[in-house]
Amino acid sequence: MVMLRFRLLVITAILTSFSTAAYSDDSSIQVINDVAYLGKDRGEKMDLYLPIPKSKKARPAVLIVHGGGWHGGDKAAKREKNIGNNLAAAGYVCASINYRLCKKTDVLADRLREVWPGNLQDCRTAVRFLRKNAKEYEINPDRIGAIGGSAGGHLTAMLAVTGTEDDIKPEGPYSQFSSRIQAVVPMYGVHDVVAQAKLKGNDLSKSDKELCRHASAINWITDDDPPALILHGTKDALVPVDQSKILHEQLVKAGISSKLIIIDGAPHSFHLQPKQRDLRPVVIEFFDRHLKGE
Image: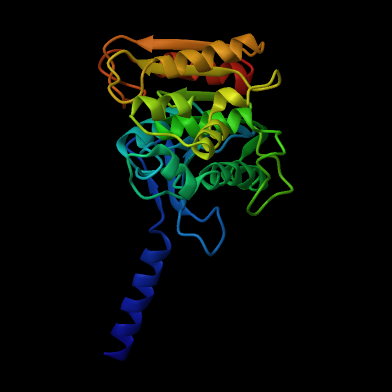
C-alpha cells in the first residue's frame, strides 16, 4: 500500500510538472501557460506561443495585450488565442499577458486613477522580460512588436509612443533592458481619453483632464516612434472610429509610417479573422516588413 501510494504521488508530480505546457490545435505551435514575468509577488502571468520546430535563427516576438476597458479581459480569451496562434504559425514568438486591472466604473478618470500608469508598466516589463529571456525562447531582442484590441489597443499604442520617455519612469524588474518596441498594431483603442470621457458624459475636473491627457497616446507622439498599423470597424458602438483616425493623423504628421484600415461593418471587438474581412495577410505582412525585414 505504501509503495502504491508512493507511485501515485510520483505520477501526480510528473503530470503536474507538465501542466503549464501544451500544444495548440496547430501542431506547429507549443503553448507555455502562466509564465511568471512580473515577479513572485504578482499573480498576473504570461502565455507564450512558440513556433516549432526550433529555428537556427532567432525569431521576432510580438506582445499581445488583451482588452477589457482596463478592468476586465484575459490573456487566454478567444481574440488573444486567435492572434497568438496565427502569428506563431507565421513564425513569431508571441507573449499574451495579463496585467493589473481596476474596478469597473463608468468614469474613465476613476479607472485611470486606480491603475494608470501601472498597467502600462506591466506591458513594459513584459517586453523587458522577453529581452532578458531572448536566448531561452529564441527571440531576436531587436525585433519585438505589439498588438492589442480595445484597452489593449490603447496600451500597445502607449507602449509604442512612450518607449524613451522619462516622464513615465521605468518600474518593475529587468530595468536594465529596453522596453522599446519596433512595430505596433493597435486595434479599436482609445487614444484621446479626454474626448472619450466627454463622449461617455463624464464631468472632468482639471486634475481629471490632466490625468486623461497623460494617458492619451496622441500627446506622446515623437518623430522616432515605431511604425503602426491601426485597425477599426465602422460598426464600433463603444469606441468611435475617430479615435483611430486621430492617432493615425498625428503619427503621419510626426513623420511616422502609419496605415489605417477601417473594416466596413466590423463591431468593436474582433480578432484577425472577423467575418467582414480576413486580416491575417495584412497584419502578418506588416510585421514581416518591420520585424523580419521582408
